[in-house]
Length: 180
Image (cartoon, rainbow, N blue to C red; front, side, top):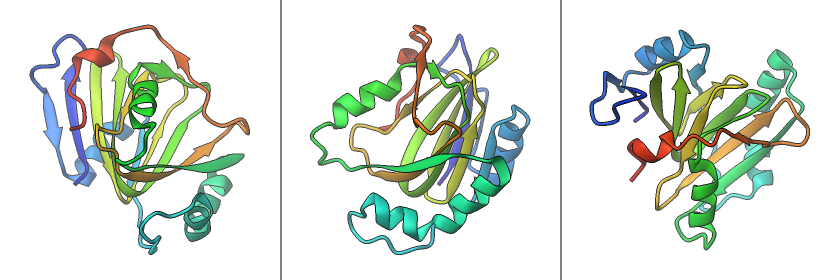
């Protein structure tokens, strides 16, 4: 179940707000210019789908975003617990960073934790199958796939080069709860 937990950026021990209600999550995030929607990830992808299988199954959703926002490229990120690179990949995304473009993800399987550092708050968004999130360009954030990752998400970009991060050097991510 999707969830949003909000903390101050000085105290990771006590949440100031929490909800698993999709409408409440959407309202809180939209107020911060973060797009959050529940879409339908209803295609059978099989046990370990190829990127081509995922793209073909959800081309209609990609086309909707391309038409709406003019995105230029997309790919699939999929990680399972048996991936020998899982620790290195997890570490790569756990440091606070920004992008020069929106970070758009449509989760078609599994879950991941987006953590957004907005103003003096940290918004932890547990995204699961059916969740679309778009983090605005320039928003400091990090992503946790957990110690036993199991997710597939379509990544959609303004930039044809794809995922390019600018790391902030702030260690804030180290102090907040992670995905189990």
